[in-house]
Length: 636
View 1 (cartoon, rainbow, N blue to C red):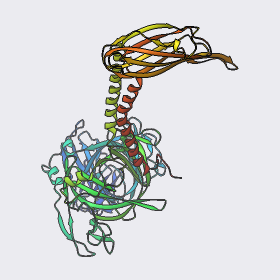
View 2: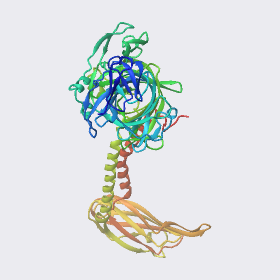
View 3: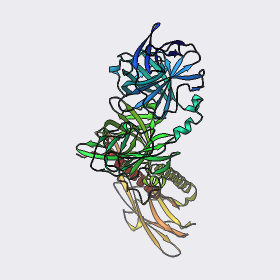
View 4: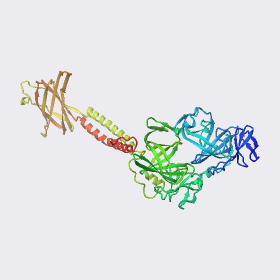
């Protein structure tokens, strides 16, 4: 590693620039910021002391990151954007190259310098905007801020006076990529850094044998509220920036010895999930450390909900959100992996989410600990997209855009996970991403019903082809001297045998033309004398009018006699006619003929339950979307 050594212009002590490209070095002896001005050195005066942060890293720590030469931490930059402080570490490689290791909220981001493409100026960037960064791809702007150069240690690759306001924009790309546009103190971007989130294990950090363990331990601290004197238990002291007193509701700044930021006379809302409760959800044992109530106001009506901040040393922070008795476990989402999915929709990990509602969310009450500088009255523009049992949510402020994914949980699941007494509050209505109890059942029931319909049709065709049997056939001439309805025209058929119990179909075919033939009939059991009456009419008409040729009726008609026992039968037929004399008719008698209306009734019976399920599923979805910005039914 090339280096440069000179004398501190403030105290004369040796100042070593381990990286030949470093432009700023903090003197280890007097704490002055020493800048390289060509072959000369200039002092910016003593830098402020380092702000205490929970970092486990230190200058001199070395490691091996996959795909890069061994590195050593040679510089530390502390930035403060007003709501929190974070560290950025300068990684020096043996080749003389360097990269940044950003540390914020217990997470680490490796950032290597990349070619800077044409990008908008700082004032033209907005959170949520997409920017083409060239070879790395298209990224989403997640944060646009100005951070103050608060303090430094070791050496830095730029010459900026401590206390300067540095402009930057953080971006999120596909595949968990992360990028930062560095604007320095000007309007135009000066550098682009691209990388991703990493762990200390991936970095191969040496010199910190218990680094991860020390990060995982968050010993509770016993403190007292300076406003009311009530006891405070800080469960994540190395992560907490704001504390809401559970006794008086005062909002405290934990970075300034619990300075009182706001005083209330009482806590207006009590959490359902007591702070300090521990529960196992989604592969972690979480501790509830913070509680806030937020709300949106629509047409003068306030809609509140509750959010619980969960903490687990190795996994970081998650949220548990409760609204009207419906619960969600909420995890952060990489904004660069959220894709536009069409009109009023988004896509994430191959799943399409439909827009449910949007608004302006306001922080109403705060209790417990928070990892950012939360304040009552904070507002953010929100948009929720649902694909049960998931909800994809976006929150946007002028400086930042955040995406998260919520997974629906019933109240009893939360009560069991946190071993709470009693029972959860009864849910009201249908949750935005509550799974429908009918969706899976509807598809299964319909598949079964359609299978039943298929079997029913096969049965009908089978009976029609194989069970039905012709038992009698006769062509009957009519005597032209016999009058319509006269006794002379009455016919008694020859006896015929009905071999098995079942119905009878009597089909009559007559050559009527613009006329009709009516048969008043009966089927008589020769053994018992039992009589089953029926009637059948054949009529057929045709002609022409202004619309052309028309026809009405048919030369064939059928009548049915209900279930008959097996035996010998004869049929009596008394004909009547009109409009012309029919020369005769053909009679065909069949036994055990399936009726199509029976198939229809059976089909209706089969479909009753699926249709009912569809209706219930439809009603469930109507209730869901009634609370959205896109109700299925609107009230005039």
